[in-house]
Length: 126
Image (cartoon, rainbow, N blue to C red; front, side, top):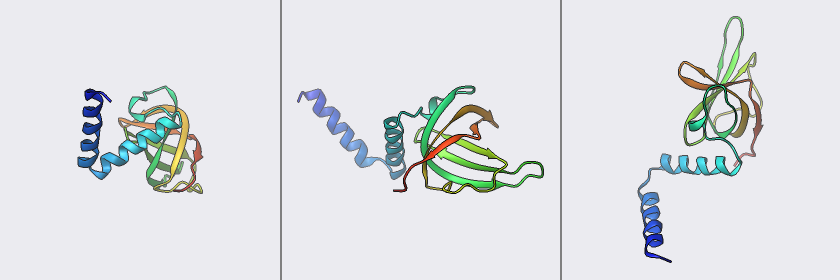
């Protein structure tokens, strides 16, 4: 092992030692997302068709007079994207803390990334 490799290993050790739990969680989510071949949300842009993978942070039913929606914020460690199912009140398995992979076209609503009616695959609970 060269001196540079030792320094790099030592630097990573101290970064992990001093990192907050949120930083470590974000790092783990990014690693898992990359392993399944998903695109990081942080690099997605409007109009792109992408597969994103991460953990649902919030799930909210929004009653509207003309079209109810179910909205879920997916966090992959790099950024948050909102998944919106139009005309749905509830979807079995879509709940906070659940891991999933979603595919669809990226849109932007109120300066936030959104995928409307995404195709999704739930991952086994951990």
